[in-house]
Image (cartoon, rainbow, N blue to C red; front, side, top):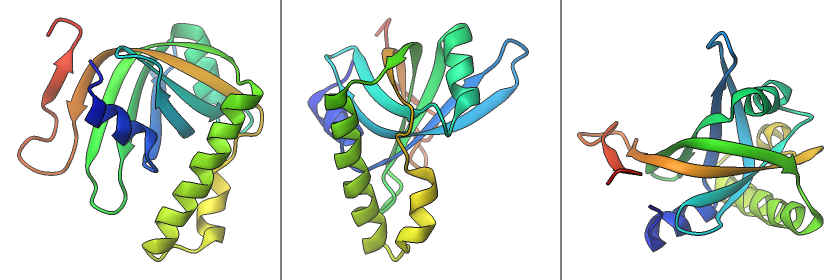
Length: 155
């Protein structure tokens, strides 16, 4: 499901946009602050429960999630959909999140963004670890292949 190239991409400094929905299918969007592959079928993602309480509530309620990973320098983008489990992040996971945030700020500053613009959405306060069992992967890079399924559980 997650080949070496996609796994490395997810772990690199890419934007991590988390889409969830409540029982009435009202959407909620949050941001991740660090992701990495656990194995070929699961990824881990750190989310601030303080900053994104609606996202956390939806994950607790139904576990359905779509995470979009986008590299800001060239907009290469993938979306992963799956079923998520949630727990408090441990010290090592928070440390990984801190390293991601430093790398993300550096990447965005190289593109001309000021740190004060970036800082408000990079928080791991009340850090939660979302473990996603990947069901499908989509190419979302702008262009002819945008929206096409790269792979799914059945492929």
